[in-house]
Image (tube, rainbow, N blue to C red):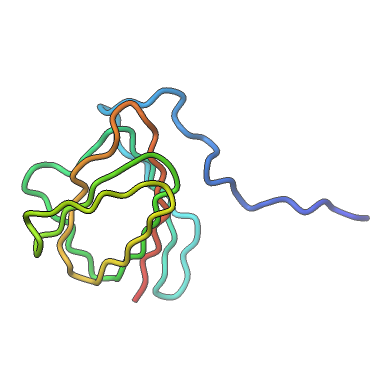
Length: 116
């Protein structure tokens, strides 16, 4: 019997039908294995709270699949890294960063890989 091959998941499945910046961001772990985690993040106009900085124990490589976003880093306080679809950035462990903005009224989809 031949069983058709099907993908494990679709990164664009289950997206919000209408972006809502008052809703929480969606974090979905897609794969986790020995010091590595792959997650999909869906933003709809959210940003990190004022004064909040991510300070993660693992390195992170993130690519923006759709939408738009700005990342701020504590070590470059006068600059915001603007990301558009296809842009990727590696963030070293413990490099403090925050989401400055995601495009309001639009669904922003990220793929993040956290690794040792």
